[in-house]
Length: 333
Ligand SMILES: [Fe+2]
Image (cartoon, rainbow, N blue to C red; front, side, top):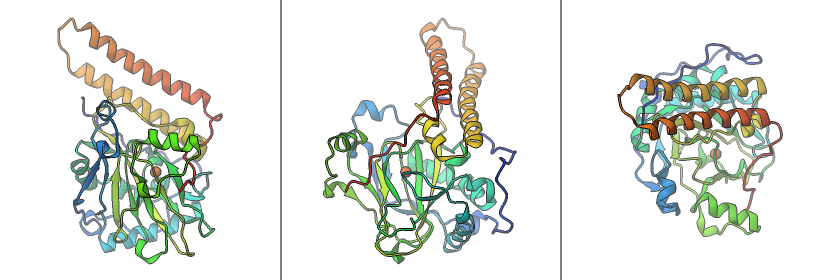
């Protein structure tokens, strides 16, 4: 598959966003402390079939916890996250979240687009990655709900392919607030939710995250996960950073209709359109730059059909946005 060129971060600042007045400057040498995870769970371990795994850019489901930030890096991110907290918005799934922080914070943008982190995660993932081409899929921050016991986020799969979930605050300093995933497929979870059945406790996994700046990397569209509520009032902040496969041509799980429910419409429309245009550009550039005199009608037709499906699917999503409801699997235990 062709390897895509990165998409530059938009040079324009959307209306309603401003830079933080003062913040630390990201320094990879001081702020990163990248350590390989000890183990990984494969998609097959969750029960996915070979044919479905073949449509994914890697066979990784989720890693064991690993370190991303140094103590100083974690302290800087916490400072930035607290400055961004007043910009929190709410959806049915998540009571307090900050999206689009990479426009406001250069620290957050530089961390989320760090070439060092990208190269490291590509190795862990097992396929080349790029920081997500939709800026609102970078540096998503979740904050604890105002009410003790309310889940930070309900059971769901992501509308992106690959992301890491990192604790910004110290997970050991609070009661509850665990990141959890379902040891099964999204199809099994859908069947459980539709039948109104509880999730068997033995199939819920709570990885032990050893401190702030530690994360798990997952194929977020394939792993059903959630963030549990706190049992006592406390500050709990996590950051989710999204990536796209650098190999162009895998099905894209971006859902404009879902993003439209969460993000400012003037921003999400521009970001989604640019993301789709980038995928099309990369496929077309690869075709133009690799000429071959051959009568390969089947693959030529398939390529144009894939492009047509990409663009017509995007057009349909853009036309129909505003009628969707939020998709998730609820709070079921
Ligand atoms: Fe998620």
